[in-house]
Length: 240
Image (cartoon, rainbow, N blue to C red; front, side, top):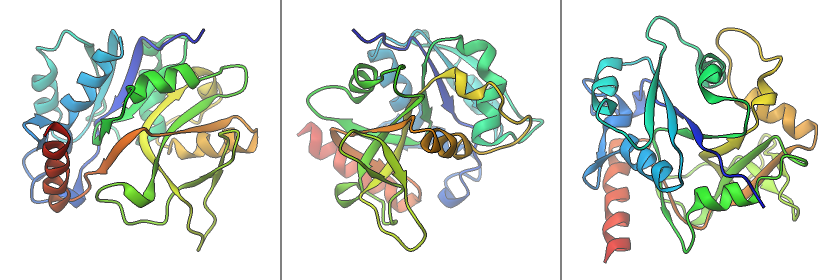
């Protein structure tokens, strides 16, 4: 029986430069899609998955996010304030580790957006996470039918779920959906200061402990203002 994470880290510190002009006066996690801020879509799904505590890191226009999340009780929000420092996707987690405990935790980008299939993907991730075999389990979206994504993918996925990073000039069928379960142990000897979390993904991959789970449902890459409209249309279609 799997143990479902009760804590989560949500990355909300980015500048959202590709979302301008929407992000000139508003941080990207607060951009509304289908009547809810991107960040609330993520936090709502965490609450539904039984997550009690979420750490949200802030850097760009931090007070807006702090004020926005102040009234939430599910999950309870702890702010990791990075306004005086840029720590990157990896350093931000290291700073928040004291709040995340010693058990595997959910890790999400605040701007990831998806519509679940028959079973919630956060529940599926928890059920699939096997700490004996894996340190990192990434939710992987098929590039072919994701909305707003036109890149070459991030990983190839082997039959056992293990991941192999895309080589230069290669096209692979899966893109990282910005949702994961991480073991805190991977940060034991992490560098101090700013670094990218992908550095730890690569190391776990080299050790055969990086795995993926195919997303069930529809993933939306909301990277630009145009993508907001496409995502809203997908939400309307799913609710119909």
